[in-house]
Length: 287
Image 1: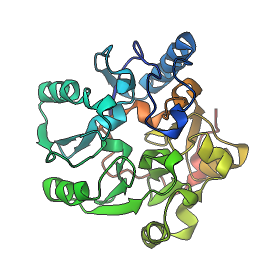
Image 2: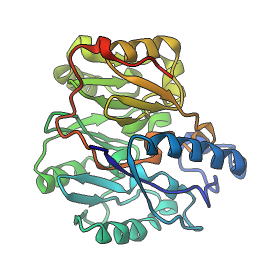
Image 3: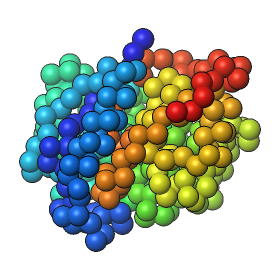
């Protein structure tokens, strides 16, 4: 079954303010034609394997293209984001309206509690828990609220490097109890949380080069990972575990602090168990 994902065309994308380190010195430096071409190429590649829905872009919301931050949809319950920065808070009513039409049960957090959707909340495929980042954009208080509303445990991971201000920039949960992540983005207790749930042979710790090119910010469709960048070593490791890597460069969007995962929100994973065949040798060669 094809998964369903939400994207937003980059009609009004640009860097007009600075709310993360990647945006520094990038105001009005986006090549809009290149950004459009990169988004279209990624959209077309993703559409071959997923059913991609689109939300109308808004001129006053240049970061709306990063739909992952709109909220978290789990078991038919949509938790609407409350953005920390005022520059993005204007996106909230548009995402709310879209999901009201989608007929989801919608949950809102209390005023004053920040939560930025799949940017900081990532379900582990095949398990009931949700990895939950906090520290820069999402408040720790949001996690207990979401845990109660969706009925799934939240595993708190404290982010400590401002370059990796959202969990999805440095952590990618994968089927068969695996995860790809950049250890230096987390504190010691968070690393212990990861190590308690992911066996050593299933942990894919990426290099600084891969991390800084947002390799962990991969959009997954079954066993295919759409990535902005991956070194040959990382691609070989992922391929050996049964994943096909499709490189879709989106470096224009990295100027605003996002890559492939940031550009997508999961509406329906399409593979509830989230498992790949155990014989990883069946993997396709990377493209």
